[in-house]
Length: 493
Image 1 (cartoon, rainbow, N blue to C red):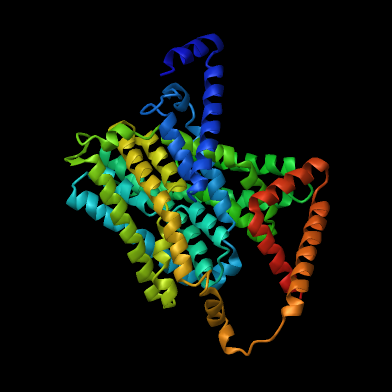
Image 2: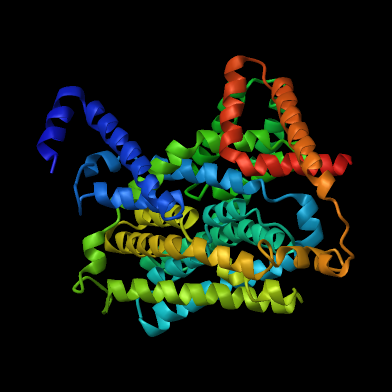
């Protein structure tokens, strides 16, 4: 639609103007679509992908392929930020408490979903070994963003929430290992016979990348002690880019290394502020990544009944993948909870919160499309993108339902908390009149929280610009900061 306009820009300024205007359009339209998804109470990632589809060649065609073709590095960078943030939830205190149980649940929910998708695609639909293995590996991934957003919005807490957060974090580790193995076998099957080295070498490189993540995590802790906010960001982003570069050189995903660096840093330093700062810094990068994914989404191929994968229409493969993966996630989580003797409220509802599939799966699909190329790569990306949109539409609702049914928030929350603490529910305790005291206590606590937050900001900030940055980070993290401070006061009392 704007080919002539972009051709003039490209000819006049070596393509710089075309790239800058395209990026500006992606940012503006992505933001505008989040205003719509916000009204519908959907996650921002849904708006970003829809914005990309609208801007892409199958709708308005406002962003040319020459621009998106040179933005391949955005996928690795965006996934590095996602993985580092996920590392924050690998706290040793939680893993020591529930590590074995959560490991069993995670392995079963991830692997059963993968196995069911592989049986569907390879044995029933007969779509080929390489295609089936990669799609099955991608089926194991779960997107943490939607689930985390729902937990924050509902202020849910308790054993179910702790289990869910750890499962979602570990889930990406399983999917990354599965993806590395699947890509190795797929590439070997497309060329020559599969050897042990073809499978073990990528795993060995991932172990090397984990070692780099451990080293940089401790080095990051050492360097963060006496640096201002801008320098902290420079060092942290530089380290993430180092892992991305090493991963690209070794032709493996940088996610495990970035996740390891985040895990080592949070356990070694206990510093949550750096994660807050990066979360405040990263939205434009994540927006560009998801909008770019939407632009590359082959909308015509998905709904064209003549577009085939083997002998099966593409849209049929996409729908079956959506249903089978969802069933595998729920069934695997249920079986894992049954084996580990989790309470019924966890067993029946955990699988519902594992539906979303966006960030990691889309990034891995983009990586697979880049490596495989051709029709197989674009078909994989189309299936993952289309299913991700559906999962992001239904995922938050299912996650909210699971939190409600498990008693993590709402009318059942008090009874659940009492049961977990092995104390009688509040209804069995004789009521005590605190009408005259409660308002004063709430007012005092609110004031103390406000004072403590201001003191922390003044102690931490070393310049007015830094204080302003921390104010913005606090607004972004709103509820989490309040919950953290409230727990702090409870511990002091």
